[in-house]
Length: 389
Image (tube, rainbow, N blue to C red; front, side):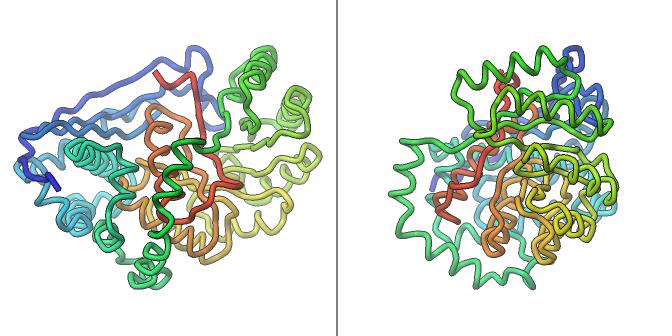
């Protein structure tokens, strides 16, 4: 390991794009988003580490201010200081006595923590000369677990059980790595169905995506029910009935509204309804899941921390777990959620509909396949091609 080298400074950049001008990213809740990122660059003696957290515009400056508050807790430390007991370092930031009051482990402070922690992983990977997924898959199980704070989740996933899960997957890691490099990871296209797009644009994008070989598509719902149904019928007419269709309500409904809407959606056979209600409502998700079968329930992009995920799993409230690489407190907390999802047999399909998120989650899903579950069937990474550059 080449983890020497002191972190000398931290550069912060407020990055914003005028996506609202063309309806990109629009949904039932975020009607005019300007996709943005609070971007952090760690300047170290042995390289740079880059991380970001995603926002939809105004408020980006608050994430930058939160990142600024973490500066004295990381500048001056070495990569070895941090990664030799990464879980303890993560906990020291997530529970910093002054900043914890603004959370704890939620909200803007947690978004900033995610950006900062991911920058550390990026620095570590660059020092090792590997992509992050490879760094993760090459770590021995015991060292991976040293990256996780098990407080609050040990009742659902004891550390010894997590170690056993990872150790069982070690023998096939090399073969799974060869497969992922040869075949890639399944993805679905979320570029066709922003709510602010005209019917003509949606039809054109569906046809273009089909021509490129896409077989799974996601569209936004949660507006007027009549409009949702009309748009679903239109998308089905374009993609056919042999393709996978997902829907996303972006938390716009109460529980009864979600159940009523999904009852109408059944005719168009969507695979899942994403974020049907408040991301904090565990029992609401469970009620929706039980009422809308065979439509499945997916959520996670706005889950504040591993504790909410733990309860969603324990309650049997979701069919698909949607981790967000920077809503959670960076890679370390994502590792905890991936392991819990594997234990509770809930497939992980990350959220990635924003600036930098597709680039983030490919590393996490590849790691999940190689080192945690060995499964790709019935799983997808979200992909938004027009946000890549």
